[in-house]
Amino acid sequence: MTSRSPRPRAQRQRLEVAVTSVVEKRLGALPVAAEFLRQLDVAGIVDEVCPGGASALVTHGQVVEALVANRLTSSAPLVRVEDWARCWAVEEVFGIESGLLNDDRLTRALDGIAPHLEHIAGTVGARAIGEFGIDVARMHWDMTSMSVHGAFPAEGQDEDFPVIGHGHPEDRRFDLKQVQAGLAVSADGGIPLHARVFGGGAAEVSQVVGAMKDLRAMAGERDFLMVAGSKLVSYSNIRALLASGVRFIAPAPAAQVKDEVYAALGLAQAAVVDWTPGREAGKPAELRETYRVLEDAHTLTGPRKSDPPLTVRRSWSTPPPTPPAGKPPGTNAWPRPPKI
Image (tube, rainbow, N blue to C red; front, side, top):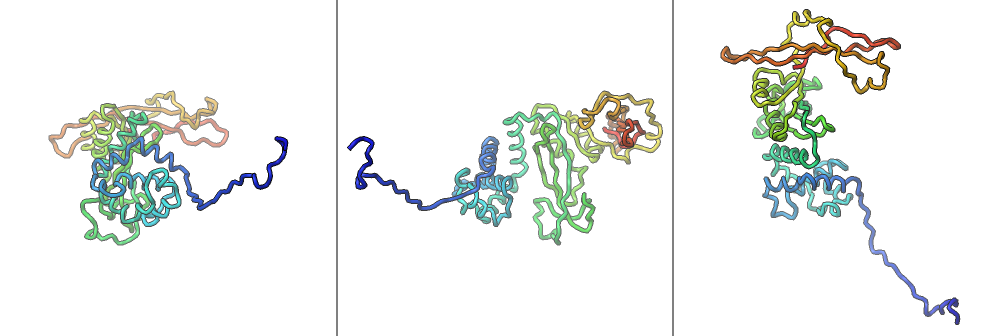
């Protein structure tokens, strides 16, 4: 028998493969979410302030990370998170069995972190700044409202947390109650760094100082510019900002600028600034918008006679109106409130 001769049938080896089960799970962006959560140490931060879940099979911090991953991949109601974890590779990526993410366990974790939300959010934000080198030289803060359907009687709500109630809704649905949220993002990439929930009746003007102090704590020794809406411009807010050394910019409330001030302004007093919006950069110079700026002083007086007057810089800008097709842009008068 030569080396090329086939083996007798009895001498041939047979390979048998038995498939007992095949498991298919979705992976999606879970590894990406897990890596970012690990770098931010979300579980560690939560467990440090909420150690009550440490004796359980899964800690509060691990549950929070799983909830964040759920929101980033396939957001589901609390009663459906366990199903999501079963269909997605949550156990393989996070090491958490799907059965440990039932709605009762999720609720206990959320109840556990509720009293510490501001501390947790601030700590995670500060870690993000340091871990990823986020530039906090300019941060934008504003509030918005979310209307809700339902009675939500005040006596049935926990007074230790924001109360759903009537206010001044952004969507003009005055027939509905609302809850409000304040959010601060970095100008560097628009990354959310600070968030807080407020009751439906909370006045935005009264929340500026609290947001400023939180952002000041997150920025540490770094100087930063706080950009906000017109509600920032009140005597108490400006006084607190000046005392803290925080730079700021906001539109002046129309009620604080008298008509005669507008009437006295003239384009001849304003200087043309060498600035081009990004949307205009590709146009020929003669077709670009021209901006004029004028600066003066704005003085705020306090509610008491003993309150010292506060003087801040005020700038007026004149973005030109949209010109007719084929016509070069022009200039117009002062169409908007100044910036403080």
